[in-house]
Image (tube, rainbow, N blue to C red; front, top):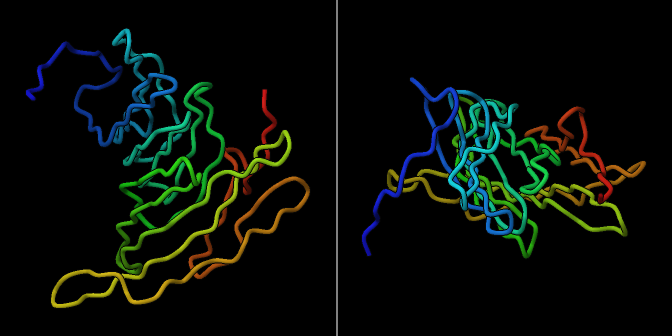
Length: 202
């Protein structure tokens, strides 16, 4: 099967810039593109081939995965993962990650994300598993329970260490959810505050 270029879609402010991952979200029929150099997420309508929106506030946006009406974006410049509603285009919650998160995978049936963090001079590369959503009546509660896969060098190659280190179940207080203490000091937070916050369905 050969691929044929069907056309060109103009993206604003795209001269002398850089993009990274992109993903198609089937329910909204929108394509979400990490505009890394502009710290934003570009949204394209897959049916009309038109640029719909530029979403700000994604520092060095890198990895993008989508499905089940949700879009996950790794923010390499902020060590975080943003969860965006594909329909409303609103950021639901931002979860702290390890340094320089890059690629990601999304398992909608488990409402879980797997984030590959590149690490830095003081932190090794690691994979983190983040639980994203729990339904509680008419509330949507963001939750996070990271699992750290430590990498060790074996015969010159990076390989997972033979053990896992998992955080405890998050504690919910005053209709909010937060990530308990862990070795990296990660926390779940809402886009405008220090913690993940419940959002009632429209």
